[in-house]
Amino acid sequence: MSDFELLPAIDLRGGRVVRLRQGDFEQETTYDDDPVAIARTFADAGAEWLHVVDLDGARRGEAVQLEMAADIVAEVHGRTRVELGGGLRTPEAVAGALGTGAARVALGTAALRDPGFVLSLVNRYGAGRIVASIDVRDGLALGEGWRDGAAGLPVADAIRMLASAGISTFEVTAIDRDGLLGGPDLTLLRALVDLGVGRIVASGGISSFNDVIATRGVGCGGAIVGRALYEGRIDLAYLVAAMRDLDND
Image (cartoon, rainbow, N blue to C red; front, side):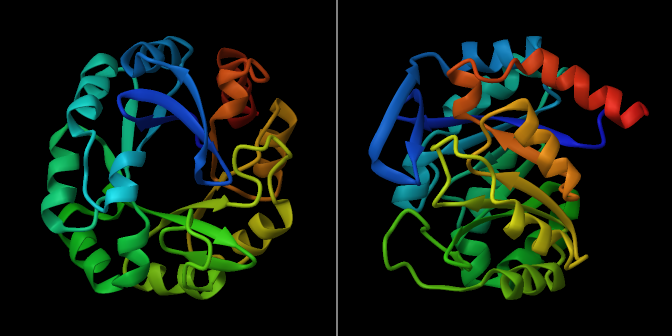
C-alpha cells in the first residue's frame, strides 16, 4: 500500500459526476451519469482511495447523496477505500456517512465553525476516520468556500486549531486553482507542510503526473485528482504504479 495517498475525486451533483471551476456551482461540467461505473474504473486502475463529495449536501448543509455513496462503497468494497464529504455538519450526519461503509469522512464548514464538534468525533471514531477539508482563498481557510465573501481565518491558524482537536490529515484546496488545471499552489502547500502538525493532502489545479510529483516533493502526504483524470491528462493506472515505485525506492 502506498504511503502517498492518491485520491481520485468523484463529485456528485444530482446523481451525476461533475466538476466545478473554482468551487463555483454556476460553472459546472458534467463528466458522467454513472458514478458507480466511474468508481469501478478507478478501482480497476488500482486506486487505494476514492474522494467522494456530495456537492448537493455541501450546498444544502445536510447529506443528500448517501444512497449513491453507499452504492459506490459497495462496488469497490475490498479493493478501494472511500472517503466521503459534503454537508456533514451534525453527529447524526457523520454517523450516516460512516454507515455507508465509508472508511472516513471529510469535514469542512462544520470543522472550522466548531472545533469541539471535531474533537467529539475524533474521540468517538478515532483520528483515522475524520479528516479536515479546508478551502483556501487569499490565505484564509473558509467555510462554504464556494461563496464570495465567506468568512475565514488564516489557514495556518485553522490547521493548528484543528490539530489541537485531534485532526491529523488536512486536505487543502486552493480555490483559485480548483478545476482550472493550472498546477497546484506549491508555495501554500510547502508552508503548511512546514507547520509540522499533520499530513497535508494537496487539492486544486493538479493537471499532470509532474504536478503530483511536485506535491510529493514539497512534503505533501497525498493528492486529490479530479478534472485531469476525466479529461485524460493523467493515466491513473500509470500514476498509481509510479507512486508505489517511489515508495519502494
